[in-house]
Length: 375
Image (tube, rainbow, N blue to C red; front, side, top):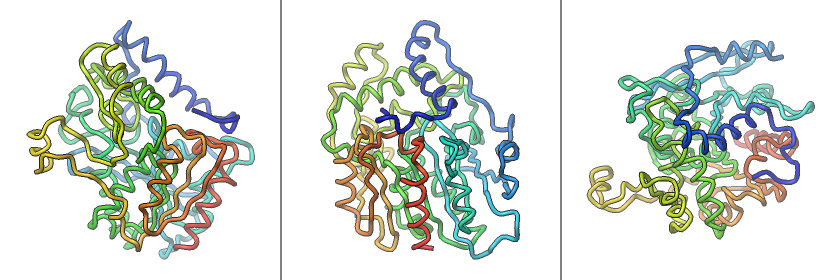
């Protein structure tokens, strides 16, 4: 998962998340127990920032609801000096398993935090938090103990969550939005941009390690990842209010087929031997009848990168040792994008893209340069 010590200084919080995920494999089976999620009202994102050396910055919290009833939180970080009404807004979305506060964790003494780097450069920065995570944890009708609260996939981020964020920022600022996504949130942002009504609100796309196509990656690598962080953790644990971070791995990852409800061994073998495609599709409900009920057609609708309008410039950043956004898959994506540039980092694995101690110079500075060119 990580390459050559790039992420040697990965924060303890993330190590904790990953350890919990792996330990959950045994603890869920043997004890039937998981870690309880925490409601956002019990803490303060802006209060957290005040404990950091961020006295030069302001922080404001906003809450809204998706079309399917999920409460979504978003935080705006800006300068304490008089705000520039012409500052271009930037929406930054986080890595799966985490929340938006993960962008405020240092990896090295010389590290620059991307949100604050952009604020210093004169951008209007907004931090989003995907549904059912620490800061976005409510619903109009459902409690976390209700199985329907957890019944969603990455595709719902693209169709419900990201559009709400974009529309809200546009209403406040009157401007289209620079979107930055990492891993699954890159996938969701790109999918949102294929829809015309949403693409009009997007000024640029920065896709860091987009998990869209798998290329010629060994299927066992991705199958094992999805199995560990998906079926075992999610299956049968909805009632105690646990979900493995930012999206439902047991139904979410593009192109992967899952077999649930058949014990531990059967899903594992089913996932490992499942077919893999290079098709970027919406969620497959398993039958023509169910898909027709959901989409109006019997086959699963497909996303096409070519549907992202050419007026949206795109920056794609990807690693040479990434098993989850493999180079061949990202290059396949790039070949179908019509207005894209890329940064290739040969030594980077997937989570290096977030936690490398060299991320400022290798990732953040190129992002800043890209946004400066497309203000």
